[in-house]
Length: 349
Image (cartoon, rainbow, N blue to C red; front, side, top):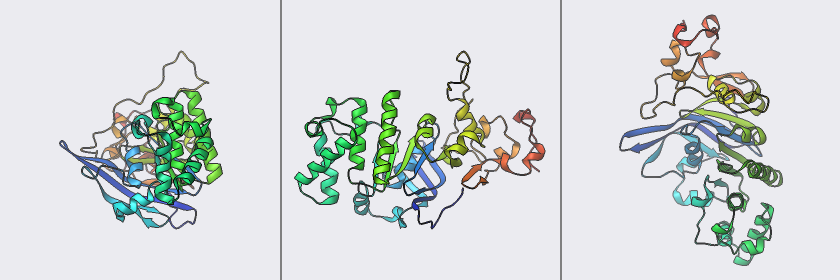
C-alpha cells in the first residue's frame, strides 16, 4: 500500500492492524494486517462482502469492540500523531464524540427509545463542551435544522418512534456531528433506506463535509454509494485490504479479481435486463483458520499454484493505487493467459 506517513494532511493512520475474537470455537482472526491513512477533508470508503472485517476495522479505531472477547494483537492506530491503542478508557471517552465520532448501522438499536431526541443530542455537547443546558439545547436545535429536520425546536421533545427511517438516520448524523469532530466514521449509513432517502443522506454527508471540513470513513457494500461519495476506496476481503486506490482507478482500472467480481455483480443501466447478474462463485474462507496463501484463491478463475501457498504483497499499480495479487508479479506475465482456467495454470518459477 502507498504510505503517506508524516504528511501534514494525514489525520488518521492505521498500520498493520490485527484484530481477533475469542469464541467457544476458537480464535477468529477478523482483521489481518490492515493499513490505511485518512487525509483532512477526505472521504475514504471501505468496501467488501459481509464478514470481511470492515466494521471491525472501523470500531477498532476508537476501541468500540467488546473487551472480554476481542483484542488488538498487533498494529498501530494514530490520530494526529497520537497512538490510540495505548489510551486508557477514560482518555478514549474524551476522544469519542469530540474528535472521532461513529454513526452506527441501525438507528433503532443505537438510539435510546425512552429518552427524547433532544436529550440524546445534548448529552455529548454537555459532556465535551461543558456548557449550560440552554446553550446545549440551542446547538442541538441548530444541528437538527442543519441535517434537514423541519421544526427542530418541537422535534427535540419527540422520541424515536415518532420519526421515519430516514429521519432516524439524520438524527444519528446530528448526534455524531454536533461536537464538530475531525473524523466521522459511518458504518453502513444507507442500509435499509430506499434509494431516494439514500441519495438525501449522501448529499447530507457532502454538505457537512463542505461546511466543517470533517474527514469521513464510510463502511459499505454498496458500490453506488462509493461512486457518489468517496475520494478513495479500500477493498477488503477476509480481513485484508486487497486493493486500494482512487474511485476512478477502482471503477475504471480494477486490478484484483475480487474487485472485478464486485463490479461485475453490480446491476447497471446499460446492460441487458434479461441477462442475470454475475455473482462471485464460492464463499469466503473460514477465519478460524485463514488460508496459507491468498484468501481469494479458491474463488479466483485466474489462481495459480503460488496463490494457494504464499500471500501476495501490496504492489503499486500507480501513484496512490496498489493491489495485493500475484498477477501483478512480473513473472506471472510469462505464464498467465486469461483464457486458461486455474486448473491448467502453472506455478510461478
